[in-house]
Length: 322
Image 1 (tube, rainbow, N blue to C red):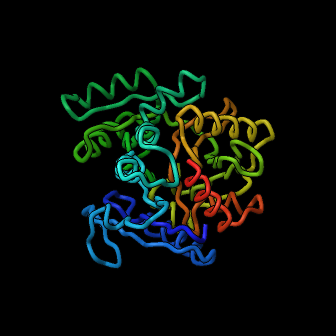
Image 2 (cartoon, rainbow, N blue to C red):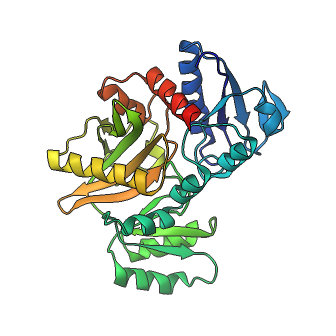
């Protein structure tokens, strides 16, 4: 690997720019410790590719790069856009392919596919801005499921623009607000229980799909879920391994592996769940999980005694072999 030059892509035009910059910084620090040469390519909020602070075309920025570590999050990075570009240039990269990335990014399509594989999930409904009578729709949703709801973007991460509606009146207000900014959203039944997340890494420790220990996520008392404003400020307690029964741990692991396989993902992923007395409820899958110093997947690696640097090296090896 020390004879290969790695291009680290970070930043991007999505709402998760800042988190991506930190993920990329963590990857770069690992490459430095591993003495692996790299180029730090920052994609700014306007979508311009910068190498050494100078705007370049993607092809020029990636010239002489042997493999790309995609440290992007959200739109452009996780929706298949940058993957299609890299496929056209013929450069291998860490993470899932274009089609699988786009599929997993769309929460509605993901749920439809996983439903056919008997993965339990909250009741939900896709809501579009065009031609929607919100007041009437809320009445329909209240009849279908409730009495509490989660409203989230169909495509997006870091719980940005995700809201808990405690009743139909709040749901009406939240939908009016969110649909003023977004073309479509997902309304889910609010399921009470423990929040959990499970990482999957391919071909690790002689397992085709190695399941990392589930993290239990405990938001502060002021929040009913892992909201965007408490993800990175230290107010949320993250317990790894989580306080789950043996049966719950096995169910979480099996569901995370199944989601990774069914969605056709590559190299690694992280799936989110709610666990209660009725079972394990799937929420969504992240194809490029955060790798910052406070991110969840690095905590899982630490819990099983696997170094972060070795993990980065392992992903690069998987990408080169793809």
